[in-house]
Image (cartoon, rainbow, N blue to C red):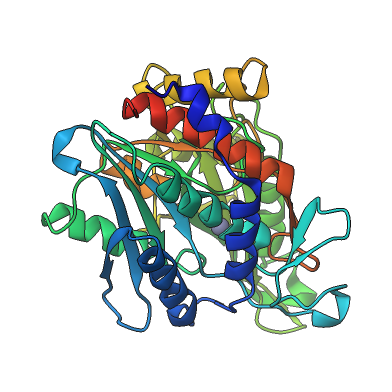
Length: 397
Ligand SMILES: [Zn+2]
């Protein structure tokens, strides 16, 4: 009889490094994932691990691997993407970005995708091998996807479509292997775009103080009112964020601008809604308008329909509880939530389908930049935390 500790002790540093290095050494910039996905299939074949390939573009396949029987109990899916961003500054790299290189001390793996997030997929692949012959109540799956960096339409969103129509088992629990500093990431901020057009009155520059109303000046007041640290706080995800990221106005050097449009990117925390965020912004503009009779603006809320609410898997979910317990056991300290200035992951799509989802991954360096690398100790700890959580949730023997 194996206890969870036995599984943790069997996590193999060499196996993790070997597969992660090989994944990094196969270039797979978004749109070009076929070769790396072929390698994944060969690796699974060599180990007798079952899988299916699913794709809405055969050039961009996803591999769904399974150990155990999904009909015998809960299904865990570990999700990771194998596409990477391109290399734009190869001369700044100290190693070949498309070769996985371990430093002389054996402590770090370098290469494009080492941190975001091929090594974490490597950890997941070794979990399949670790539990391949275990007696599991339920099943352990990996959703190894090809398209995360530019929208997920060919990747996780396709996989969820296949789950919705019954072609793939619906997971009860999902792990997301994106970097989380080995902290439990049970929530993510939502996102809302708002365009605001400030309306002035065009005129000749000479008449700027007579008939003109300068829309850029009006926008400037609005920007200064909005651009600030937001104090609201949620224990799982931290503060909301507001940033004005685009501005457009004016037609000529000698014409007072009649309109100016800004684009606001607003990240929401649980408890905030589209309506509450819009109300906050309108209140700030109305305070300006109370002092300025010429202050006029129009809002275009969610112009491209991409709004997503903040999404959270509750703290009392068995998945969150299991991860917290595993962090206690493996790291020997009280688990923290990942309250960082972090962006979104594919975890939001699973949560939209009401699937309990936790992000748990290593600390990385240089994601999307030069000399991307990952601490190998972190990968081993990630593997141990995964093994402990899997063993408990699937009663591995
Ligand atoms: Zn990523």
